[in-house]
Length: 437
Image (cartoon, rainbow, N blue to C red):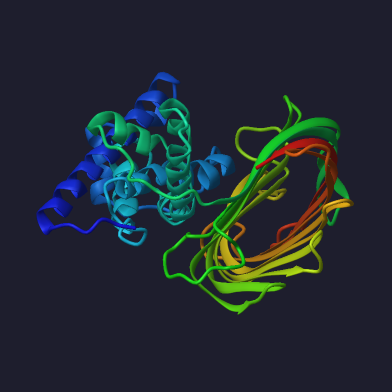
C-alpha cells in the first residue's frame, strides 16, 4: 500500500523518483552509445527539434517489433518502479510513466519523437512494473540476496543502493511458482497470397526455458488494490540463428470480488489489466514470423471446484477490449515489413484438471482480433486475427519435480484492402522437466 505522509515528504520523494528516472534513461543512452547505435547520440539540435515540432507516428524500415512492443514496456517499468519504491501508489505512477517516456523521447535519443513508442511505453509499464515490483518485494521477504533481487527490479535495486532504503516487511503472497526446462521440435511458416507464396519456413529442434507464477489466491479475491492477485507466464525457446519463440501472457485484477465461496466451490471476478506478447518463428532482431502484442482491459472470472480430496478443476476466463495492439506485416507491394497498430477484442481461456495420482491436464486457448488505427501505417485499413492454443500434460515424479509434454499451435492471418493477404503459422511439441513451489 502507498505510504501516508505530509505534502513536503511527498514532494521530496517525487523529486527523488524523477532524478532516478533521468539517471536510468541516461544509463540506457550510454549503453546504446557504446554499442554503436547512431540514434543514441542526442544533440542540442535534436532536443530543440523534439521540443518545437509535432511528434510523429513512427514507421521506419528499421522499426523493431521486439524493441517497440517488449523493450519499451520493460524500460517503462523502471520509471514505474522508481515511483513505487518512493511510496507512490499504482495509479499515482501515471505521472512517472509519462515523465519517463516523454523525457526519453525528447532528451535521450536523436530520433524524431515517436507517438507510438510513447503510448506503448506508458501503457505496458503498468503491468510489467507492478508485477516486477511485487516480485521484488516477495524476493526480499524470502531473503533473496540483493544482487539477485536487482535482476527482478533494477529500479528498486538502484534506489536501495543509492538511498539505503529497505523494503517494508511484507507477507509472502506467492500462490504458485513453476520453472521449467525442455526441448522439442517446431514448424513455422509465413506466406502471402492466401498461402500460395512462402516467405519463410523452419522445421527443426529447439530448446525452451520459462516460468509461471501466480501471486495471491486466484479464487478468493475481494479487493480494490490493483494486482493483489496477478498471473505471469513467460518462456523463451530458441535454435540459435534459425528460430526463437518469445511468449509473455499476464493478467492482474484492478478490482475484484468473490460471489461464490464454499468448501468445494470458489470463484472471483472483476476487472483486469493485461499485457500479452508473442514473437514466434524467424530468428531476427526486428521481428519474427508471428508477431502479436495486446494491452487490454478485460472482465475476468476464475473458478475452482474440488471434486474430491485428490481431484481439482480450475477455469479462468478473460474477455474484453484491446486498447493498444500491434502486429508486424510484410507487404509485397512496398517490399518491407511494417508494425501495424490497432484496437480490438480478445478472449483467453485456461482450463486445468488435476488428480494427485494421474497428473495435470492444462488446455489454454487465446483469440485476438485487431482493427487498425487509421493513418498509423501503409497497412492501416485492415484486420488481423490470432489464435493460440496450448495443451499440456504433466505429472509429479517427486515432491517438487514434475515432467510432462506440451503441444502448441499458433496462427496469424490478416486482410489489408488492396494489399495481399498474409498467413502465418507455428506448431511445436516439447517435453520438459519443471520445478514447482
